[in-house]
Image (cartoon, rainbow, N blue to C red; front, side, top):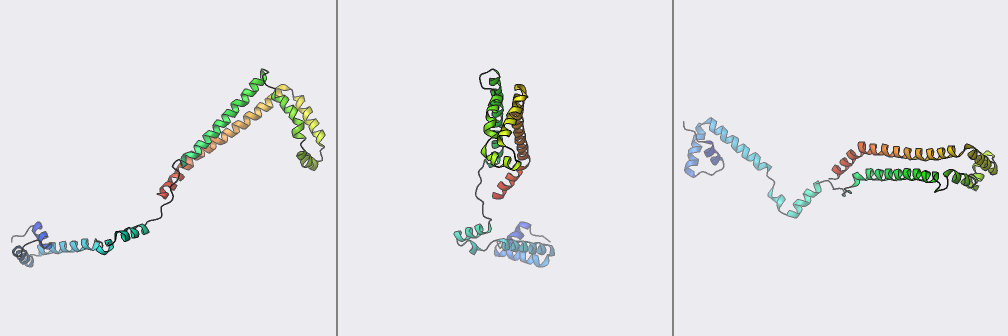
Length: 211
């Protein structure tokens, strides 16, 4: 038995044969189980493909079609500033630079005072003790609560400061300033490390979520 090829069978399924060829294939399918099964499989496949094609009515109005599509999409978030992930390190770097400048200024002031170009920091502190410790707010609050006379507090502090000597006074002032700046720089380093570990991932998730 001569079997028609798959191309001819497919043309039969698609109704592309002339009447004579179609009748020959139809007669063959009545006698051949294998060709008939193949043809029925192609017919089922064709119907499945047709079932996946959207109804032409859905494309009747282009505006309505895109309106339905947009209604199924999640609303887009407002765009974020693209440099937002870089903001924390920039601010921390600026703060670190300011602290470094402050450190240089403190060291420079002490150096200039050492050569006599500026008043000694210890003398400036000694002159400001009466104004700072004798402030009316301290006298009305802390001193009143502790029962201390403001004049005695100022006198005791001035005498103790003078008894230290210039070397100890300058050491205390310089050490306090340097320790404060170093502590601030350490805090900046910790914040910068925290940003490096935590911020990029969170910023990336926010950006991806917005898209």
